[in-house]
Length: 398
Image (cartoon, rainbow, N blue to C red; front, side):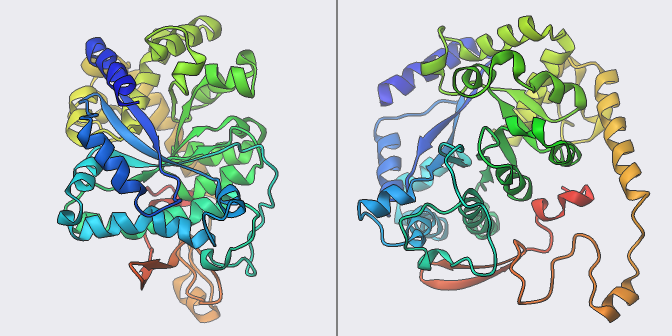
């Protein structure tokens, strides 16, 4: 496996202008998975300047429970995150894992989204330590507890000057619309997002929040949706933050350059312009988990600024008029929404117990993503998120 990955890395290094975020699986079946993965990567020298890693977590608790590998879902969460907390607090606990995490950019959640599930979560939903039935938890349940633990972990790592992680799940390829709702609330970016074509309101929210969507039309063509029905050109025309990516390239592509296949076929089938292709490439840089210094080199020193000020046409080849159009359209849509929202009356809302938009509920009886109590290292950590990106996206704040 290491030799195959090294061959892929070698091809990327030869091409010079392509980089990859490859997935490695951690199942949460045992607590030493992270250590074994890190030892494999370090001992086989599986490294390239062109590659970063995303850790994909398959949603397979029902299989592990049936085969008696695990007693409850809480063990999955513990196995996934306890080693990360330990090595973040004390890198000498496992130097190989500490070194490996320097090239891990985030987490992915994967499985067949079309599997039937009960997507409803309410006050009677049990916490992970009490989820001991053979039924698989719903998509949003998986995503929420990954997100909540990542919030605490990222705060810890940031305080120690360590690299933080993003949540970038497979979302909206098939299955229930509620998956896209969970992705909107919790994810930094998503992969696929095909079902947004059936939910205009959610599609508009993803546009307003500029949540990145990595799309893989050739993979979708083989599994879920005919290429000509893929909504990518419509998403791009409407201003969603879209990029092209390969998915399972050894399975669905025919050449050693699968990403070039994606761009070539998309350009021919949908008659994309050169500006469209350059915009897709620029979006992929903005969405990627590569280091800030590399992004500055690829997209320009001011790439984090909004509008034309953030576009370096010599590097991106995206005309300023396209960037200005995207930015002005987004600002106008946000202004149009906020012009119909009455400003909150602070004193009145406090007196009657109401809230201003985007403020977490102070009522302890309500369970929100703003207040999370997680078990880490056998201790209870209380996390209050009053300014998390995803909690306030509806207000246009990132």
